[in-house]
Image (cartoon, rainbow, N blue to C red):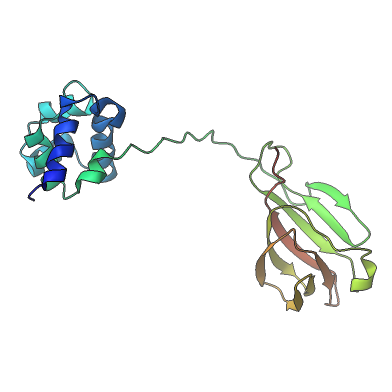
Length: 210
């Protein structure tokens, strides 16, 4: 791979001649690329011709790579210069949370038209709000106003059949196994049309806090 004049200028900066390498965290970025490809230091050494000790020192910010070393890295790893000089991705740390709800043990929240069972109620600051609903309503006239709330909603019919009324669309018939995703600040309402009251699973995004 032949470097252009612009690339050579950027590489001279990255080689430590100007205070530019440390903010780029080039060593951390090199390690990120290596681990993403499941390469050992030995693998990278074979690909680039750079000694394992040199690569280790680069990754640990003990030395700044020379212009020649950076050329070998981008050529041997088959990447371009921006890939090597881009900032490493921030590492997200999972807390490993979980919240089990056994059948029938959710938090009951009955209304005149729906019988909600809120699921996973013990976990705070959730990014989703799951709940199961028995649709008691049998006609749209049972609703005094549209149901609406902030965010988005995914809905799947678990049992029976429903009619989904929405503010901007014609009524939609949904049977067992059917699902739909919609903006839940759009007025909507569910009505059972099967012999037995339908049961649906919904997952909503929570209200944003300022």
